[in-house]
Amino acid sequence: MPNPLLNLAYDPVLERLGDDYYDVVTAAEFPQHHLRFRNNDLLSLLGADPQTVKDEDFIETFGKFAYAPHPFLALRYHGYQFGTYNPALGDGRGFLYGQVRRADGKLYDLGTKGSGTTPYSRGGDGRLTLKGGVREVLAAEALHRVGVVTSRCLSLVETGESLWRGDEPSPTRSSVMIRVQRSHIRFGTFERLHFLDRKDLIGILLEHVVEEYYPHLASEPDRYLRFYQELVQRVAVLVAQWMAAGFCHAVLNTDNMAITGESFDYGPYAFIPTLDPRFTAAYFDYSGRYSYANQPAACAWNLEQLQVPLSRVMPITEMQAALKTFGNCYQQAYRDLMLQKLGLPTTVPLAEDLLELTLQFLNQSQTGYHSFFANLRHQFVPAWREDGVPNVYPDELTDPDLVQLWDQWRLRYQQALLECPIEHVTEIPTQLVQHNPLTALLRPEIEMVWAAIVETNDWSLFYDLLDRLKQ
Image (spheres, rainbow, N blue to C red):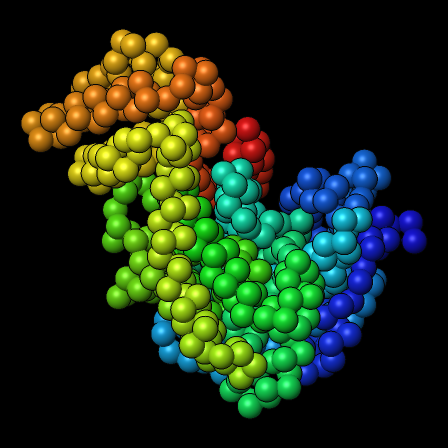
C-alpha cells in the first residue's frame, strides 16, 4: 500500500492468543482531523523512513482509521484502584491498534487513546480531551529525555468534537492519540483471570509474556519465578527513575502497571516544583496514597498483589522472597541516579553523606528541585576541586540553619571532587548536561502552552517546549 504506516511489520501476536483476552471493536468516526504532533523518532524505531511518511498518512491511519492491519482489540483487565479491587475495568477509550515487529525481533504495541467507546467505557464517551493528549505527549518526551523507561506518543490528532469534563473548563476540544510501548499487558490483566478462576489462561498469558518480553529466560526451568524476580527489579529501577526525575505519576493503580516494567498512561501527573515528600499530583487523591514519596511503597504493594494470580502457576513463598529485594534495588538505583545528577561517580566514598545533605537542603530550603541541578550544570567548573564550591545562593538564604547546611554541602561536594580521579572531574560538565535538563515540565509551563492553544490556536509554544525538552 502507498501509505508507509500500513506497511509496518505488523505481527498480531496477542490476537493469536485467543479472544479470552480482548474484544474486537471499531473506531469512532470524527468530524475533523488535524495532525498536531508526529514523532519521527518513533517512526524510525518502528522501521519507517520519516521522510516517506506524509502528515496525511498519519491522519488516514491514526485519525480516520481508514484501514486496519488487523482487528482492533479492546483489552480486558481488572485492577486495584486506590486499594480497592474493581472488576469493571478494561480498555474504555482505546484499543490495541496493532503490534509491530522490529528488525531486531522486539515487539512494540501501538495503542490508541480517545478512539471511541468499547464494552468497557462504563457510560463514558470514550474520548480524550485535547489537553489530555497534549499533556501526555509532553510527559512522555520529558521522561524519555532523562532516561525513564516510558511509553511515547507516535501521533496526536485533534478530532473536532466538544467534550464535557468535570476537571476541565468545558466544552473542551477532543483528540485521539497513538501510544507506543513494548506491551499493554498489565498487572490487572492477570488479576482479571484470577477473578474468573482461569488458571489455564494465566499460564498461557504468562508463557507469552516470558517468551516475548523476557526471552533470555524462556529456556529456564524456573522461568516463571525468574520473570517475577526480574519484574521486581525493573519496577524498582523505574520508580527510582521517577523519583530522581522529580516525577509524580499520580495514579499508580494495578491497571496502570505494565508487565514489562514500563511507565505509561499519564493523566494528572506532575513534576514536583520543590522536594516535598507529601506532594500529590491528583486532586482526587485525598489521602495522598500516591504522593511523591509514597511511589516506591505503592509499586511494591502492586507487585505484592500480582503474586495472587501468579501463585496459580508458581509458589507464592518464592515470590515473597523475591519481593523483599525491592527495597535494596530501589535504594541502589535511586542513589546511583542522584549521584549522576550531581555529576559524580557511584563509587565516590562520600556519596551517601553528600546525597543526604543534598536532599536535606532541597527539602528544608524548598528551592526549586529542577533549578538546583540546572544551576549546578550551569556553574560547575573543574576548578572547584582545588578552589572550593562558590556560594551560588547568597541572596536566597537568610535562615542561619540553611546557610550552615549549604556551607556543609559545599564543603562535602568539594571533598567528593577531591576523591574523584582528575580525569573524571573534567568529564563532570558533560555528565551534568546529560542528566540535568534545563527545561522542567512544571504545571505553569504546561498551562502557558495550553492557554496559547485555547485562546488563539497557537501551537508554537507547544512545539518550542518539545524542542527544549529534547535538547
